[in-house]
Image 1: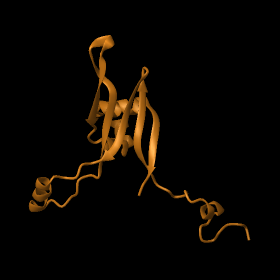
Image 2: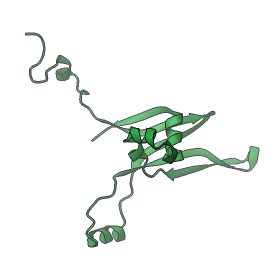
Image 3: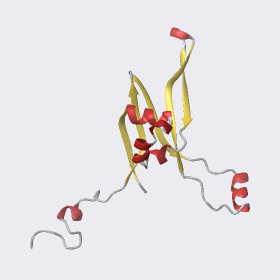
Image 4: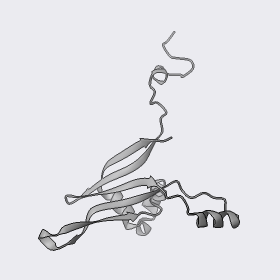
Length: 133
């Protein structure tokens, strides 16, 4: 016997529970000139009763995405100068996942790439992943 498990084809596959595990990007921490910002993948809000009713009545059976990407900047604006306080900003980043899922689009459509995508790509420092369920 060569030590290869016939069921798995490789000895590590039989003993490594993480082999074949799918991970999903859930957040990216970015830094630019000592300023940190974050992009986070968060659950989408469920549709309101009105929205749910209108989609079923017009025959549209496609379900909304289960998540969206947001941008968080804790120091986006400032009120009061030196002795003031920071004003945080949270913004939705529409189509971010579509841009990340298609790297060739980033190369071929540079002039059409949204600023939030450019910032994520150029300033990314740490990427956080979660197990895909």
